[in-house]
Image 1: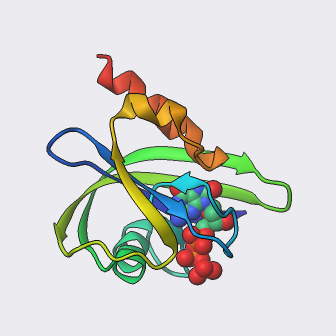
Image 2: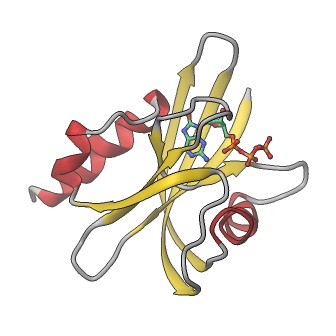
Length: 130
Ligand SMILES: Nc1nc2c([nH]c(=O)n2[C@H]2C[C@H](O)[C@@H](COP(=O)(O)OP(=O)(O)OP(=O)(O)O)O2)c(=O)[nH]1
């Protein structure tokens, strides 16, 4: 099982940040919440702070735990743990991604998300309707 942490960053307009995996890496062209593989001995929160710095040069604050999504890809099983968070400082620079978008939860339905992320899109959508 591959443990991966992802962060749902929200802005003042209630939009969430998604990023498209660049050409040449696993799952290229699919959209995801930023994050990455949790290293040995690392907490998901520490992983997210490290990954967002490495991947986007952003300092973030990790907030509430949203939930996990376990998904079987063709050659591995992933446990994706999602948290909410906010940007503290930094201008987004892209390393592993070629594009980012701030989208309303409703718009996530139209986006080619990594399959493991789809349950979180549903969850955000349900929340927005309350
Ligand atoms: N970061 C991230 N990865 C995801 C998500 N959904 C999903 O299926 N994945 C998959 C894609 C990759 O196979 C794996 C995470 O790998 P990664 O390439 O982002 O992580 P990393 O930076 O630690 O990896 P590496 O390139 O250093 O080996 O999880 C998601 O929302 N965010």
